[in-house]
Image (cartoon, rainbow over all chains, first blue to last red; front, side):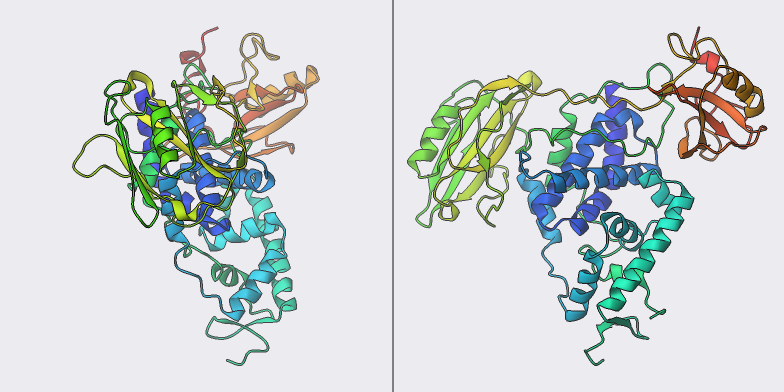
Length: 182
Length: 319
């Protein structure tokens, strides 16, 4: 029984590890935080291995857990911090390439940060994890309809925030602040 | 402004490129994490007896404890307590300290040797299943890059591990706090490493906290001792079941089940809703929550076997 559980968990772990680490790295400011989120997410999954869905749905389920872990992580200031050195190092690799810190990206980032947590998460799941509405519904435990409506509103709010930040869209799909000539 | 694609804008912010994978599941960190996590028994199955096939997208009511304990070096075989040469600590002129550990039982000796070499360290050995009562001190949040290396194999040896610490990166008042415990059967050890600042309390061993068992909000209502004991709803239609529930004064909600192709047994939760579904929908089980609300597990389509049980309910639950 335990072997069966272990095999099942390990299969899900191997399948989802790349995506969950990416998920955490995209949302955490430091590799240590990302490592914590990854570790806690999989620890929760192991504890609840009997509820772990099979196949592709497992990754969606893990996104949902990671989202909760992340929210909890951001809240807890005094939490006991455990360090897993190899994991830190691996996550740190993901932070190695500094992002293009151009002025347009800064402006977009600023606009993005004005959104609520929920709005950011919905937009991120689409843009970063490439999930469709149904997958988001599964990950977040929402109905498809709720996802559709919330996503629509999130996009509108972000669009407004971008407009306020004077970020304009140009024909070659690059974003530039209005004051910067192409 | 209409032509702004918000999604593309968000994409430009991704630290890890959209769609790309992060870490490698075969890497040292991934394997170490897997080993730590699975070294503990998972929570007892919430759904017992025949529910194993029932895989649910149980959503997000995650209950999680803090990431337990922590860190492992490569698995370490032990060869008896306090054997000579169980560890070696060397220091180079540039302040780099290399620690090789082959046996973890001589925690005090290791600690003493580290202190001799100007590494402020506290090392405790704990039996499996115990942890030090926390918090023992204040954790350093901002760990300098390069303060310590990954534990790695000792070159040319199969057992033990080594790691390096750059003592020049220590700040005054900081202490390395190691807790080492053996895994059951003595076939390995795991190490947790914390960097603390200020006073560190002595280790007071306490049993490791048991992970919380996750209790789902809804549980089967039609079995012994529950609110619908004796009532059968499985394989009936909503129209057949609802009048009786109403007669009993029950508030009823509906879980719309998502059935995987081929109905192999098991289901996902599409949504739970209060709005009624059609009388001709099929009911596969009824659940209750603490407030006495009944949740019917339903599908619009009729299946030739009960997705909740992967077959007839009687094959799983005997009254």
